[in-house]
Image 1: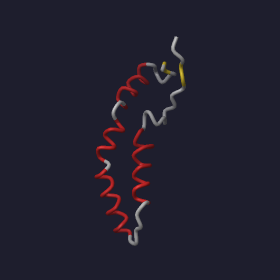
Image 2 (image 1 turned 180 degrees about the vertical axis):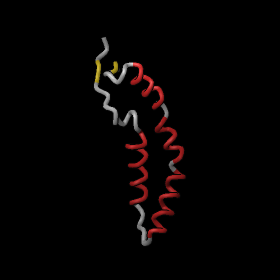
Image 3 (image 1 turned 180 degrees about the horizontal axis):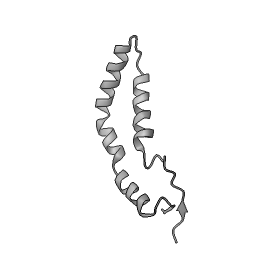
Length: 79
């Protein structure tokens, strides 16, 4: 029988943008020096646009994982 493991509601598996996208965006924005608020905002817009594909890849499979959570009523799932 397969082992079960806890799957918390705020798991990176269910919320990839909370963990991977925002981390990546923060790393990119903080790697540059910003003298003005306008410079910071422009940098954020530039990197959000550049990370569009990254966000799409991060979300692949989320639907299946959410459906599995619904199927088991939020209980532990088999690996």
